[in-house]
Amino acid sequence: MSDNKSGLASMFGELLSPFRPATDVLAEYPIVLTLIIMVLAVITASIASTIVVKVIGRLVKQTSVRWDDQLIAAFHKPLFWSLVFIGLVLAIEPLGLPQTAGNILQSVIATTLVVIWTSFLLRFIRIVLRAMSRSAREHSMVRPQTQPLFENLGFMIVLAIAIYLMFRAWDVDMTAWLASAGVVGIAVGFAAKDTLANLFSGVFILADAPYKIGDYVVLDSGDRGKVTHIGIRSTRLLTRDDVEITIPNSIMGNTRVLNESGGPHEKFRIRVSVGVAYGSDIDQVKTILYDIAIAEPQVCDDPEPRVRFRMFGASSLDVDLLCWTENPEVRGRVLDVLNTTIYKRFNEEGIEIPYSKQDVYIKELPSS
Image (cartoon, rainbow, N blue to C red; front, side, top):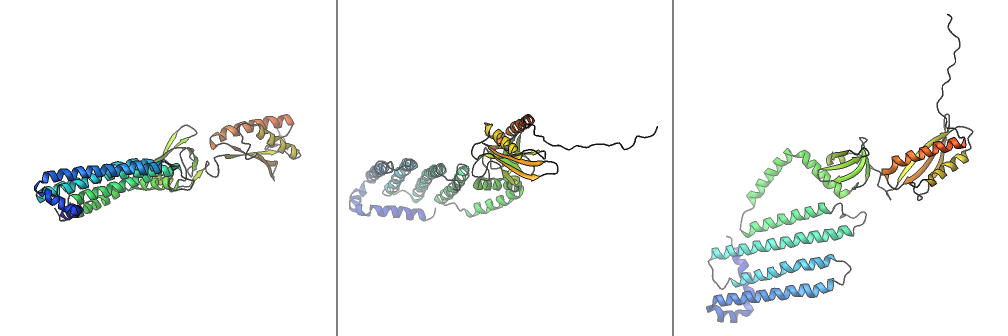
């Protein structure tokens, strides 16, 4: 064992210097002195933890948030046991244990404290990140979609530091372990480069959030569907044919993704293009299209439907009906209803929808 443990014991031993006259009197009774120190340590820990929970806890209860109450409740246990174990380090000093036994006991105490505080820090990270995700705004870094990412990252950092401190408590040299970990990391990196590419792409997708669960997206490949799952390795889409597609995140991160549910709202605009014959009353056509959109329950009133006379076509007057639905999922259904209604209404009103025609003239019949 190194000399840092004896230095730690001497540092704690200086805490007893104000009580040196009393300890000198009880020096002939080391067991009694040890018990007295332990009792005082437990009393001190109980008082300190009570002050934190009762006094400070009463103050934080007056705030509008609730996560600080959870932190105070979680802080009670590590504070109490830290003071008790400090008292234990002071209590074993009068016993005059052999150096080896004393160092082992101090290593056990240090390891126990690392475990206690690691548990507290993991709970602290979970409480704070969940509170941040609940109150997150649209462009906040910590959102419900990215909370698991930051939570897992924080857990890994805390656990790595905890393992390092445990090795240090037992005077284990970490140099060889770190070198071995570096070699293993390089080998794993080459063997699982595709998996790692998906992993890092998944991290960036969760952090950047170009789409979320429930959004309708269209990929460069033409695949269109509802996002049902965003994982570290892949993203899943449910198509309109009720077929689930699993796409590796490395592909999702390097392709053009059209998010039909993105933008200021989830509403999706539908364009119904129709041509009417030259000579038709264009004002009547625009009024009919507008009335059809207004009467359809699946068409939104806000934004209001619009009718636009686009151009003079080769054989028709081209008009567009623009209207919005609540979400992209019902686009095909609403288009079917609108097209059917427009066709029936134009027939009733005598408005012709032109189509390509070919007239065949026989110039001369063949001679028999």
